[in-house]
Length: 129
Image (cartoon, rainbow, N blue to C red; front, side, top):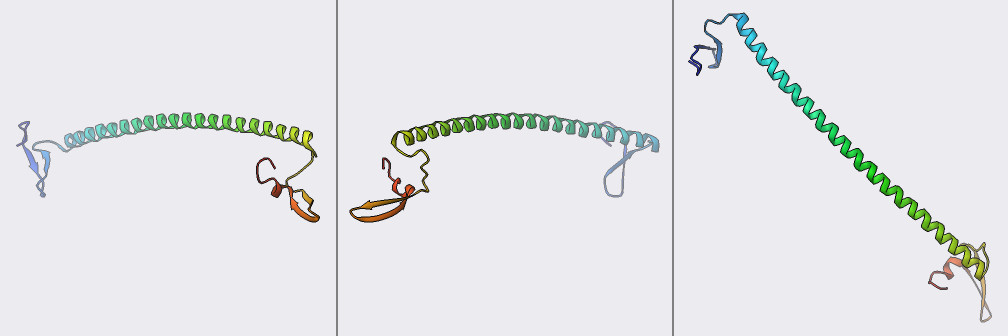
């Protein structure tokens, strides 16, 4: 006897079966209803999961665009800084010598009667030289 007061048959494995006196079609309808409500619950869970995934995707996209904008701003600042530094380099070259000087230029120096050859980059390793 179950708690509702209806008698139940027990199958050969000790599991409750179809209520005594229930027809096969009543049993099928009862199972179909349970399957239907289980299917609806599963469908709701899938729909809820889809909503959560869409929200997570929107958040990720928002964060991505925020980071991309930050990087773009940093790139612009770096380019501006390079432009300023190139201008200073050009101004220094104009006021102190050859404007077309390159760090790869080979310089010949007469140091106390002895000729020394070096790249400009080697001679300029220390600041102010």
